[in-house]
Length: 433
Ligand SMILES: Nc1nc2c(c(=O)[nH]1)N[C@H]1C(S)=C(S)[C@@H](COP(=O)(O)O)O[C@H]1N2
Ligand SMILES: [Mo]
Image 1 (cartoon, helix red, strand yellow):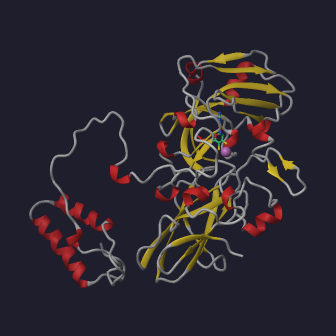
Image 2 (tube, rainbow, N blue to C red; image 1 turned 90 degrees about the horizontal axis):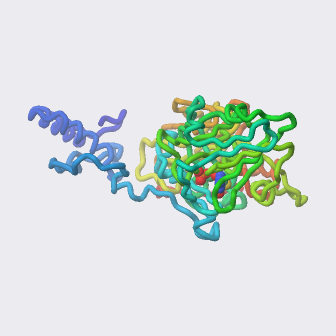
Image 3 (tube, rainbow, N blue to C red; image 1 turned 180 degrees about the vertical axis):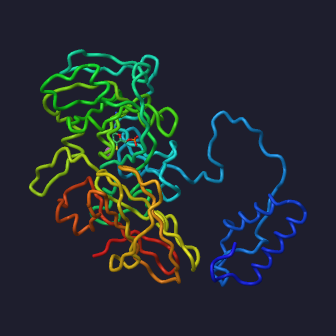
C-alpha cells in the first residue's frame, strides 16, 4: 500500500505490523484480504498518507455464506445504484422511450447486457424463437424464409462494437442541460456481438441486378423500418448473441441488424423482414426523424456514420473528487470510421493538452478506454478530452461543430465536453464561451 513518495510512518507501521501478525498466524489470505480492503474503504481527509486509511478501518465476517447455485446471477446488492435511468421530460411514454447506460459506474469497454441502453418506439415485443422467420424478398431470384436454426448453420463471427443512438448528446447541443455523464453520453453501449453476415444470407437468395437498397423491418408494434444503402451490406451482420448469451429482449431478441459504427437507428431490432429494391423507402425514421435539419429548413438524409467522440467518465458529475493527491482520469473514446488513434486530455479548458494512455485492445468501431494519472491540489479544473481516429478525424469543439452543422440539428453531436471541477471536488457540466 505504499504510494510513491507519500506515506506517513503511522499508517505504514500499522499496515506492516498487522500484516506480519496475520502472516505469523498462518493466515496469508486474510492478510491479502485486509490489504485489498484498505484499498477501497477510504473516505479519509487529505493528509500526508495520500488519504489512505489506517488498518483500523478493516473488518470482516468470516462465516459461511449463501450456498452456490443461483440459476442466473445478479450483481451484488451493494451495487443496486448502478442502473439504467431515463429522463421523464424527454419522451412521452414508457413505450416510446430511451434508457441510458450508467457510463460513470462502468470499467473497461464492455457494457453488461442488463445495462445496455435502450431505445424503443413501441416497447419490447416477445418473439418465440421456434416460430420466428426472417423473410427475404424483393429484387432477389429466390425469396426465402429463414428460421433461427437455418441462420445459425451459416459461418458465425463475433465482433466487439459500440452501438450509439444518433440522439446521444442531443440534450447538450444548445446548452448543458443535464449534469450527469449517464445523460450526456449514455445512449452508448459496447458489446461482443455474434451473428452471420448479411451477404451470406443475400447470396442464398440471389441479389438481382439493380438492387441498391434494402429495407430492414422489425416485428415491433410500429414495424420499425430503415433503408440500408448497398455500400453498407458488406459490413452488416445479423446478430443473435450479445456478450456470449442470446440477445436480450430489449436489444432485439431473437435477431437484429448490426452495421458497425452506424447510428443506432439503422440497427433494426426484432428483425423479421428484408426487402431489396432500387431506391430508399424514405420511412418516417429516416425522414421525419434521424435526419439532420439544416438552416434553410431542408434536411440531410442518411448521415449514417457516428463520428469520432470521447468523454471523461472519471472524474464526472457522478464521480466527484473526494481528496487531494494522486487521481486517475479515465474515459472512453469511439469512432464509426475505425480505430481510435489518440486521445488528448486538457485540465485547463483546451489551452494545454497531454496525451492519455490508450488501454488495449484498441479495436475498430469499438469503445477504447483511455487513462491519465494526475495530482490534484484542490484547484479548479476545466477537464476535456479530444479523440482522433485512424481516418484523421479530430473531435471538434462546439464552435467548430456549429461551423459545419446547423444549430437546428438535433442528432450527431460529437462535440468536446467540459467538466468543471470545483475546489470542493464537485464536478459540473459546463460550456466554454
Ligand atoms: N425494431 C426496432 N428497431 C430499432 C428501434 C426500434 O424502436 N424498433 N430503435 C432504434 C434506435 S433509434 C436505436 S438508437 C437502437 C437502440 O438499440 P438498443 O435498444 O439495443 O440500445 O435501436 C434501433 N432499432
Ligand atoms: Mo436512436
